[in-house]
Length: 286
Ligand SMILES: Nc1ncnc2c1ncn2[C@@H]1O[C@H](COP(=O)(O)OP(=O)(O)O)[C@@H](O)[C@H]1O
Ligand SMILES: [Mg+2]
Image (cartoon, rainbow, N blue to C red; front, side, top):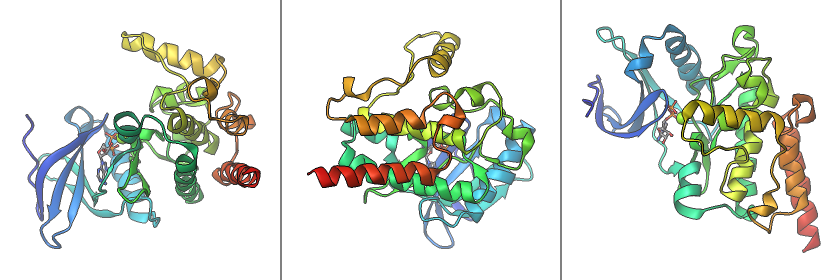
């Protein structure tokens, strides 16, 4: 068991989740009484200067400056002088991740429900891009779903500024099943890199499974198999998993997950436009 961190002004109550790089606690801001989520770098990461810098200069800054209802607000940033541990204190989001919703609750999300939710995700991502950042870790585990059906995009841990050439030629971090080849091979990244991950998310919402996956128990081989599929295998037909999915949606997902970055949607607006056209055509048919 880990001891709970002791922080000035915050009562840290319990651990709510543990991701790849961080622990997130539920706490209370003792001054306002509001609940907060407190994100702490894991011990094995918090001495890594590159990760520390990103945590402070990108992730905390983004939570501070992004004024979008679907991105949690920064409440505080704490750098403890004795331990050198750093904490991002942010608005607590009630709900669960989209991943939990799909795999533990619903199985797959029918398109009438999935598409409006996905348009909300695209709108938020368009905002992040407009502010000059790439997210680079879009996945169902980093989208939270609130009880009212709204979404929040979280985890800006490996985000990067588009103008930052050193990170935009790829740091190689990310989650293999959502990473296009240019990201795993440390080539030039762009909005199209997030678009690919968004295409994987849409596939996952509609079918309840990942388009490119491996069940190899060996972690190294597992990643290698996924990367190989992403690079060489076509995006699977969603119909084989859920027969209600039509060709129009298949074409949209295939464009978003095209191997060649130039063949994908180039912006989230263009992606959203395609979905709105699809919705219009299908409503007219009914
Ligand atoms: N603001 C928040 N409110 C509620 N839960 C959160 C919040 N931020 C993160 N979490 C939870 O903590 C988990 C890990 O946070 P995340 O920022 O994704 O860290 P990691 O970089 O380790 O993946 C998330 O999947 C989510 O369940
Ligand atoms: Mg995460």
